[in-house]
Image (cartoon, rainbow, N blue to C red; front, side, top):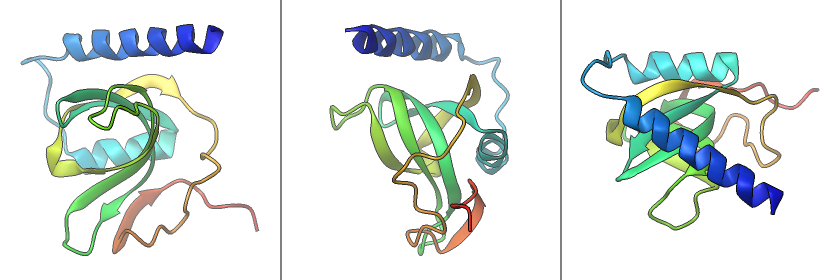
Length: 131
């Protein structure tokens, strides 16, 4: 029950953050924000396919069609799939209201794919497993 309460709190935080975004937001290059979030281990808040999401970014780069992609683990918000938590790949062109969240994370998710083959070119990614 505590976990469900915590998730509802995070969703409320995401919605409040989304409501706070507006015309005064300065549009910044998604690649810059995505790379900064990965480098600083910070979550991202953004709007995608009609849903506000809180995501731990793991990999940012280009797919084989030269489209910017973000692979991350969604921790809160909503989703068209009905599964608000889990691994997602996002087309950057469909992301809006992108901002760095105050929340940080401390390690990659266990299922993280370092040098993910879904990317033709990786611009930024979390460190891989220790050698």
